[in-house]
Image (cartoon, rainbow, N blue to C red; front, side, top):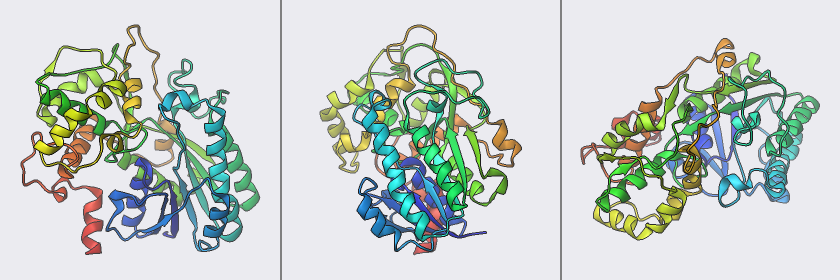
Length: 384
């Protein structure tokens, strides 16, 4: 079955992947975001520019979306510095209001069949308290300040009133191609490697203590969102999402170095949130030397350099609580896709190289995007 899906937050990591996944499956796709998503440029996908904090604009837009059957909601409002804002009342209220602004008029004008909502492991208390291992969807709600519960409670009530299905997804660390977003590590890792190489310094692991956790390739998340739209068993359910394995950044570091064409060195505790902006002039030298796209460093990083400090446990010297989520439930319900996490990181680093965001590492200079079997390639070909 296909329909017409509205992807809210389409310029973000998951929104872009979802738009591509649904379009490949033959759906009509409306990509909603304030700015035109670069990675959707040229694809057979309609873009709708809309500020979700503007209730009147959302009401006006809803009147033209009466044929939308499904919604994938991935939009998020974050404060500068990222983690410090997660419990901020303004951040929580804004995210709740954005969802209401969109869905209240849309549910009145369209005959919605299903809405998917994106959360994460903060639902289980991370990084505020030690999580149960593994975190399971059946465990009692962990009450702490987060917009997750504001959005989820509203959506459950609206779904019951309006008669549509809903599914909540909680992926782990998501890995993909987007730059300038709030939480995506490949651009940060690649920029750090290039700056270190330009300075004649090794690609040292910048984090703290050893930590094992999980990730989710963005292609897996996009596929899960498509699956839930057509799977009655998924309606009314919450699912954890991971690649299906655990990993350690320190263990992965040599493979990342090989992909990026740099040399590793001894661990060196470095806050990338401070280090990368401080070396913006060095990055500019890299851009000019390698003829990269002239995108300002701040636009490449978004808030992801702050996320990198958390992900690498910068400054943490003692053992850290495990963050493991069971993804048994979603597999038992029929979604069985898995990814090799190391290959996932390297794939997206190469994608960034191919798009001239990062300098070429072990990639031949004539390498093109199509050679990566990227999800965008088939859609680009069909749009020509």
